[in-house]
Image (tube, rainbow, N blue to C red; front, side, top):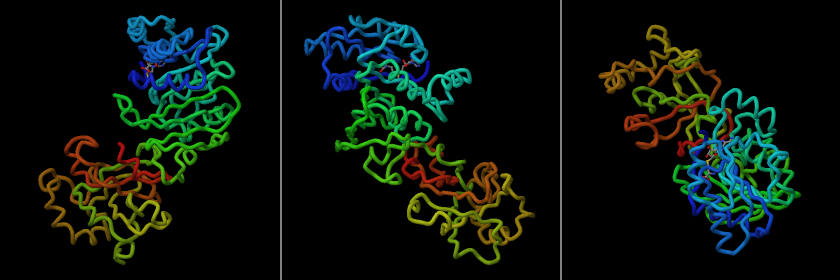
Length: 402
Ligand SMILES: C[S@@+](CC[C@H](N)C(=O)[O-])C[C@H]1O[C@@H](n2cnc3c(N)ncnc32)[C@H](O)[C@@H]1O
């Protein structure tokens, strides 16, 4: 079943507390738990209502996985009716509308959706766009089923507030009041969710949004209704200063472990130090992660000396021309490297056969991953990533999170 990340009870209590902060439940209210899992939010609602002696709203939990429904029923909650159904196919005609919608919707990227699901969602949801995620659609459907004046609270990754594919969702939400976006601790979930945030939305006219940052700082802001990224408003920072939450693969064309011998200091040279005898054919513009934001990306100061063709094949030695003359002086030290001497790697090759990439693309060198952050201990030998930099995403911060 897609996107199962259970909500710890302390977090469910906190979100429910936020839901009822300015609007105490009254007799006859209805509450919806979409993608309810084992219904931690229902349990939190009962706890909070009992503690305050508030009437418990009439609860409806919608979940596709019968096992989760069985687990939820075992809780013995008094106010909840369970529906084994696809939340995204419910209609207000059959299901009615709700005073409250609360949950932790599924996180499932487009690659986890079947072609049939993608077609169906695109036909029904304006937020089903680009590299959509299921929780975008849960926001839209949650709003569909929310009464005018009602309140929705979801905990999700914060990524939707700035990624391009969520622009239609942000436009949609531009017509209602985003009351609050609270960035919560990274370790709020046992199964790690990247940059979680609680979003509270009232189905009423747009107004100012309260923002809480992870450092506890709070402020009020006006979010653009155009669908443009909310990053600057939510972080109070310039776009380039923020951590976007993108992974490296979102921003680059290709990631490589680089030269087999690891001797980047030989293959990466200052543009000014390139010998006249080395033809431009072998040179690729290159920037290091820490140079981002400080060098002119149109004419970076370094060059990578690259023995591969545009179609990704390694030139044989007898076709290396001026590259071979240049590399010959380093040959002995490169041939002494373990991967060449013991593993039979070609002394000037990269770790892997590289796929084709236009010469004009910028390469970027990023710092070594620490052991364990990527792959196995052998990644210690991966001393650089050479990537192709496509736009102004702050990749160096992104990289640390892979
Ligand atoms: C992130 S989990 C959260 C579960 C629960 N709300 C919690 O907080 O512990 C999302 C849940 O949504 C359910 N789900 C996924 N797609 C669904 C859909 N289209 N309709 C109903 N439930 C769905 C999954 O089975 C999963 O239980």
